[in-house]
Length: 158
Image 1 (cartoon, rainbow, N blue to C red):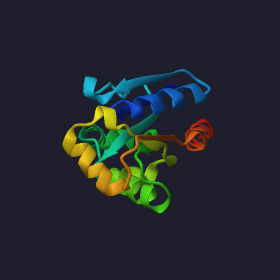
Image 2 (spheres, rainbow, N blue to C red):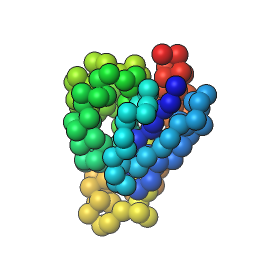
Image 3 (cartoon, rainbow, N blue to C red):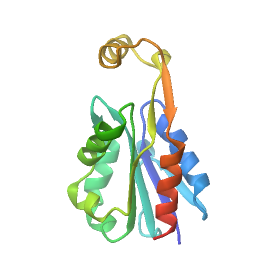
Image 4 (cartoon, helix red, strand yellow):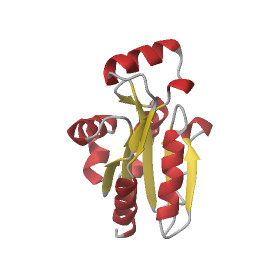
């Protein structure tokens, strides 16, 4: 079976998570940054879609990819993931609000892979807003390796 991992990222954290995920899958997986365009889905049995959460929403290229390909995706084995600083129930709510309900209903795996706040990569306004939200001016990075492994296992077992 062939697997495609597509993602949308702003600063690169989601790309890192997609690469870790690809290594956790038994078969070779193609990886595509949605900012480089939309791949042809016809050659893939499994599609894993991910995106970073920015200002409470998933990146627009991921949202657009899902809506543009919804009918095709519903016929494939689909996994979904988000990358963001929220965890627990907040991350679950963000995941559920990030993808179309029809896609959430057929997805065989859904996870949050953690997130990163790298103040060195942000502009002034982004730093200001994140300091208000997180209460910290320290950069932070948290990759949820267990969640990545779990999504990979769920995709392999379907």
